[in-house]
Image (cartoon, rainbow, N blue to C red; front, side, top):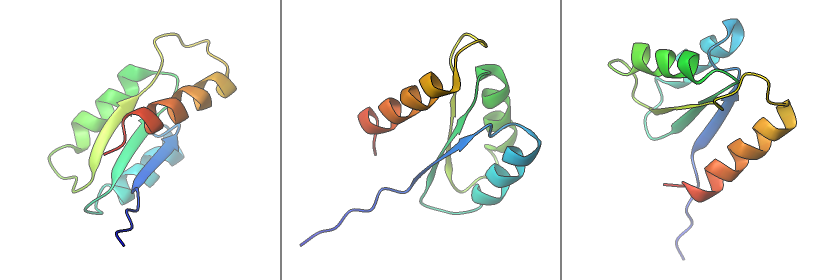
Length: 87
C-alpha cells in the first residue's frame, strides 16, 4: 500500500506582516508547496520573487485580480485551486 501525503500549505495574508514571517520560516522546509494567498496578487508575487533564490519549498503566489473580493470567496478559490492543481 502506498500512502501519499499532500504537503501543501496555504497562508492567507501570506505577504502581510505576520503571514510573511510564517512564509519565510516555512520556505526553509524542503518538499512542501506554499500557496501565498491574499487579495493582492502583486504583493504575493513580489514575496515569491524575493524568496525564490533561498527557498527550499516551492512557492506559488495566489490572489484574485480584484481587491474587493469577500474572504469566503477567496477561501473557495484557494480550495478549488488546491484540489485541481495538486502535485
